[in-house]
Image 1 (spheres, rainbow, N blue to C red):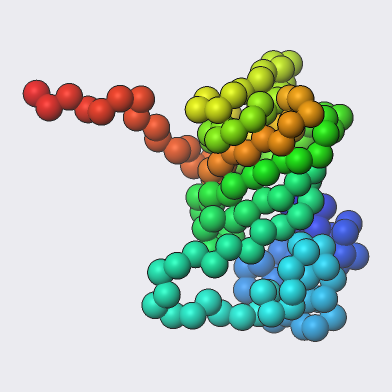
Image 2 (cartoon, one colour):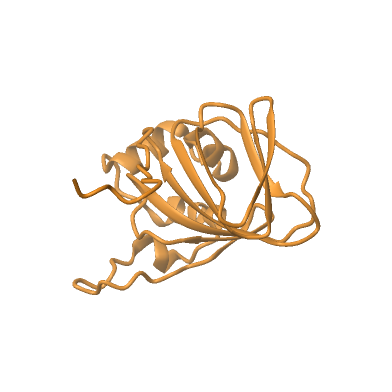
Length: 169
């Protein structure tokens, strides 16, 4: 979400959110409660440190956007990985634009992906990557659930995918 979208959802000013994000302002309970509601997490999720030395990723699924999103990386910056399960039947496209770069791999089902004026349907095993500054949207291509993985780089980091093993010459 953009700072403007979070601001609209929480009634916290963009400048305050920016200072919280950069560590220039300490969070208060008055600020944390609307943020927890907006992101669909508990207050503990916002303030607890993960246990030190534990290599396991503790999955915390989030409902919304037509289904469930499961963050697969514990950090909120840099390259992030997500599993998406979209169960809602054929949502109307609502194209969004934001900084970043996204890589998508379809696990199961049929994913409808709109990027600019291109309207595509991806099936299991297919991959797409795109600059998120282009208007884009994804959802079910039919009335069946679709599952896919996404890698998102908020500053435009790209995932490098090797199509076949390197030759050993």
